[in-house]
Amino acid sequence: MLEYLRALIRFDTTNPPGNERLATDFLAAALGAEGIASVVLEKEPTRANLVARLKGGGAGGAPLMLSSHTDVVPVEAARWSRAPFGAELADGCVWGRGAIDMKAKGAMDLGLMLALSRAGVALSRDLVLAAVADEEAGSELGARFLVERHPDLVRAGWVLNEAGGFTLHLGGRRYYPIQVAEKGYVTVKMTVNGPPGHGSIPRSDSAIAALAELIVRINRTAMRMRLTPLMRRTLDQLGLDPQSAPPLFRAMMANTVAPTMLRGGYKDNVIPGEASVVLDGRTLPGETAESLLAELREIVGPEPALEVIKSAPPAEGSADTQLFRLIAHHVEMADPGARAIAWMLPGATDSKFYTQLGATCYGFAPVRIGPRTPYGALYHGNDERIPIDGFMWGLRLYAEVVLNFLGLRFDQVFN
Ligand SMILES: [Zn+2]
Image (cartoon, rainbow, N blue to C red; front, side, top):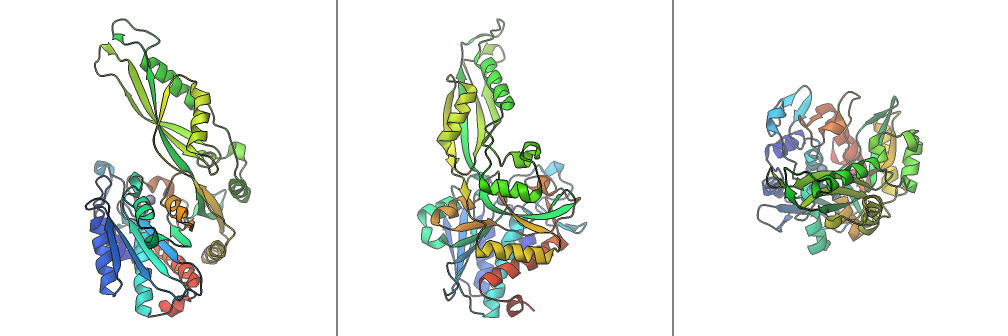
């Protein structure tokens, strides 16, 4: 499975433009060689999605889907110490874009499907593999497309996806966050108009000046803190006080808006009549695009135009399920003394789309990480890499959970 990971990293599936078909061709060939048929669907050329299924008896319940995205975010190659698509083995790690986010889990998913097929064992429920495009750019051509246009292919009772199962070192203890909720997003363009004029005659009511003041106001105004029951429990388990929690956790306790793109002006000596900013808004479970806009309106007042560019709802599942307990049990067996906790992702994953088809989705892509590895910074960061021993540890744990949920023991499939 380490070699599957390295093979996947070597395909440059930077999104944009994506080219995920490079990865899905590889997956389809590997599955096909083992006699597993896959369905490949593209909304746009080269933006392929792959779904494969091993049939189970059904006595175990609704299907389990193992989901990953095959695209990755762009790299600034000059800032990397190794080739971003080289999949080099060095310093005990596999290096390359996607090593963490999220080709490692893609490789585990593939390996498990193949191992199950080879072992010829009976499954108590269907096992579905989904390897999808375009997650890093909103999933329009990936999970969203499959859910809206081919729901029967990806409808599952349970989904294991990214964004959980890694070691979180906090206060001298080890935790494994399992994602059961994620925020929604509401991308808003805020536009301000003002009198245009000559740059030689400054005016304080120009569009740029007014926009700058609004951005400062947004930055200085805390949005309403609201603890969902899940977050209250997470903070309790971590022993964190909501008022003094680190920024990562604060983002899980309120809607947020972050200015990310500025536009205004077209000539150095012309005061433009219009200026705009893109605000990356994120909504808590229970909130909507409208409620975020209303809260933003309270901060910026009635003047600026607010236009929603794109949005997707938040999602929240339950941590009180057989699968969650199974995950927690195996995590705590695999790393004695550590604790599995349920948590919310401030970002977005494909889980928000699979949830719409009734699935309970968990972020569980296990990898053991040492206290000195800057895990959070590796997501979309330079020098993305995964420790090989942590990958192997995660692989075993992942296999235990998946096989157990299919009514199997580890030694029935691996020896
Ligand atoms: Zn990802």
